[in-house]
Image (cartoon, rainbow, N blue to C red):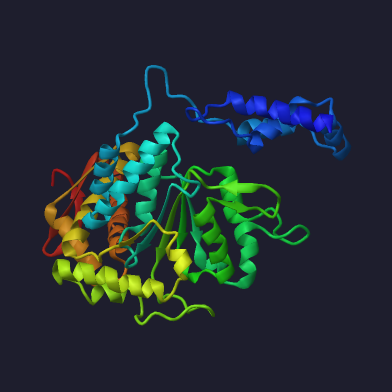
Length: 410
């Protein structure tokens, strides 16, 4: 037992040397154990590695890469951490047409940021568990990415689970990993995701499509903030944000749940659109009844908040078109040094095209319409180069009822 104790003591030393929340007890992680094993090559681990033919230098290089800490800011620069109020304003500026949603998110953003900054954990559950309901393309996935940005620093700090991929009874093996000796052992997407980075947003898209056993595993995660990995360790999600999305009616009901009385959340929301604040209250009450008819009470009781998204109208779609054109202009400027401008009529025209041609896609439809402008822009640039008149600025406008792309000075 003494070699094992030596490795654990060395691992504890490594853990104590890593940054920890104030007054927190150092927790030995996998990186600490691996570092300790590599640091004692003459003992138990070294003999094992030699016996199985593992190159210690290659393993050490892998550990250095896999567990590398984020790089420090450049000299003279420091990372700017937005205040909770700034974070909420930033989310509001990007989640167009969903003011009520941002109002509901504000409390969670403030609580998570303030508690993380102080190393405080009110309980062992995830930092937040949010159930987002609404039409396709209304901003649910974007919300997860915005939360990742304001909480963890990057919109890339999101791992997405398409729950339709976990609809069969056997899919639990893909979700948390298979038992020892079975195909999929050590390959659970959730357990490995928690192993690789537990401090991020875990997005479970269309959660109603998951098999009952997968929902049971998810319930344990929401309730305890941890889940057992068949490969051995317990994976913790205490510092994760869990986002669930649903569009009820898109999948058939499971054996243990009743089918909702509406075709989808889309039709539920559409039926009470433009009926004022009383309708908003009714919408949430009706949505709650639909959810209670589908999910078990103990599952819903582990969710911190159910948030209802509204479908977009022409005004909101125009704002999304403006935002999409702004992102396109930024990319053109940064990548090929071309300035893009557009008229108000052009943004409204793109929104109208999306509203009429892609009504079920909402924001996604607008973004596809914006991307459809790209070939015309590149064609114009190529033609200008061929004529010996390179362009550095282009403009999108509406001429005779049609969207056109031309030189900015035309």
